[in-house]
Image 1 (cartoon, rainbow, N blue to C red):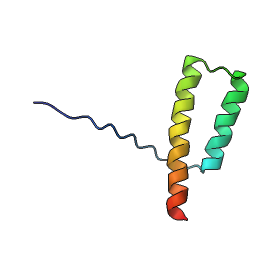
Image 2 (cartoon, rainbow, N blue to C red):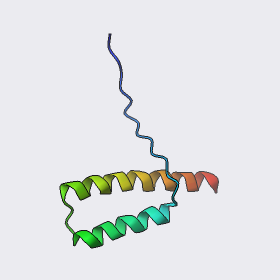
Image 3 (cartoon, rainbow, N blue to C red):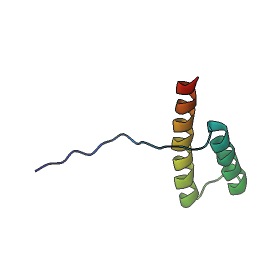
Length: 61
């Protein structure tokens, strides 16, 4: 039996897009402009969270 995997990523954010954006900016400042592998994973997670928060904000408006 074959099972299909969803390719949709759902990230729920309790924070505003501005709050997540500030954390993204802080990550870049801490890294000195070059992200390590671990930092890159955190960055990707934060970008997804930011996008979800921005979408929620847009839907609420």
